[in-house]
Amino acid sequence: MQNGNTKCCSLSRNGSLIDKGYAISLEYIGENTTDVQACEAAALELSLLIQALAERGIPARVSFDLSHIGLSLDGELAYKQLTALAAQAQLAGIELFISMEESAKTDAILSNYARAAAVYSNIGITLQAQLNRTAQDLNGLRPVPGRIRIVKGAYQEPELLAMPRSAALSVRYVQLVEQAIRIGHRVSIATHDESIVDEVIKRGWIHEPGVSSSCYTGFDLI
Image 1: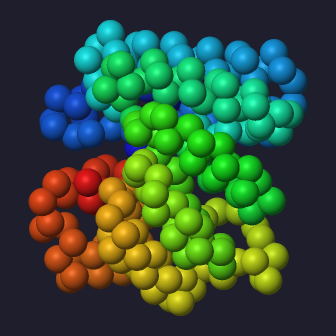
Image 2 (image 1 turned 180 degrees about the vertical axis):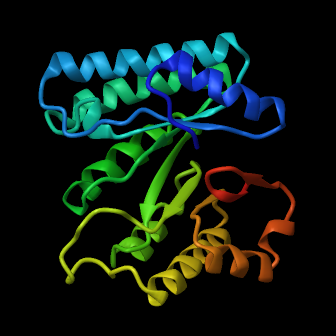
């Protein structure tokens, strides 16, 4: 993944990667927006990004936080804006990824995701390996068709709720990837941890049909 300060900058930078055959993922960073107009402005910016990608014929992924487009104010506002973006992105062959936020928001994020992904299969969700609840959440997403992106997790969480960075967390991460594959989900392995990448290679997951390398995830199991 590469970041740019503007849409033009980001698309320009990623253009060279596209020319080399890489898939790209763009993240519009922002969260905990508590003003309706700011939420709508964030959704508009995402819409313009999707439009720019469509005009250039770039089948990218676009990631964002639901609290940037309304979740902190009203779940229905977030859902309305999410589904409008998903409809636009689906026509352009673009995949949307909902980023995961603090554990206090997990239920609301998963609820909005499952509801929207039941209508738009081009929406994926991010799960954090550090959270003790994630294996259960993953099982709960069994009937939902979207891609699962697994990250270690970057938020500071209470010890009761999460596992700290450690070798044990890397083991849990691999277990979650295996669980997602066993369930039948498409999986994005979003890590730069060489021990995890080595384990993925060792287990032969990258040799399965539909697996492609990616500059930000390591590997995608489609």
